[in-house]
Image (cartoon, rainbow, N blue to C red; front, side):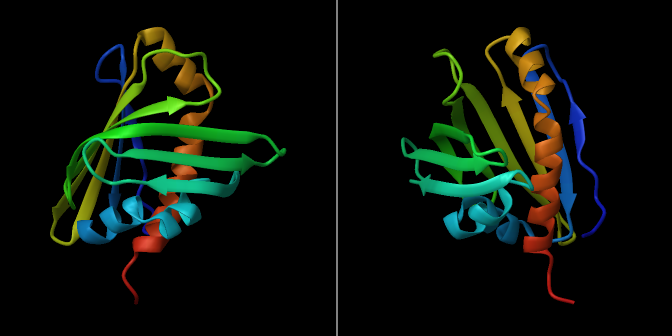
Length: 159
C-alpha cells in the first residue's frame, strides 16, 4: 500500500466528503470502481463477502451491491446512475435497503489525476443533518478506510 490516508470532512450539514490519493492513473481506479469482478474484491472491506454486484453503468441505469457481513447478516445498497463521465466522474443515488423508505443519498465520485497519481473524492449528500450524523455513527468511515486500502492494492502498478 502507498500509505495514503483518507480524509473525512463535512462541507455542509448534509454532506460527507471522503478524499484519498492513489499512486495509480485514474483509468485504473475508475476500472476498479466500475468492474463487478474488481468491486467484489474491495467493496466489502474486511467485513464480509459480496453476493451480488449488478451494474448498468449508464445514465438511468441501476446498480445493486449485496454482501453477507461477518456475523451472517445481509447488507444491501442500490441506486441509479444520474451522470457518467468515464474516467472522470460518476453521480448516482444510493439507498441502504435496511433503512426506512426515504430520500436517497446522492453520491458524486470524482477521479482527478496529476502526475500519474489519482485523487478520489466521494461526496455524499444526505437528506438531512440527522441522517448524515446517523451515517457517521455507523462506523461507515472505518469500513471505507478498509475499502480504500484494498482498492489501493488493486490499482497499484506492478513494481
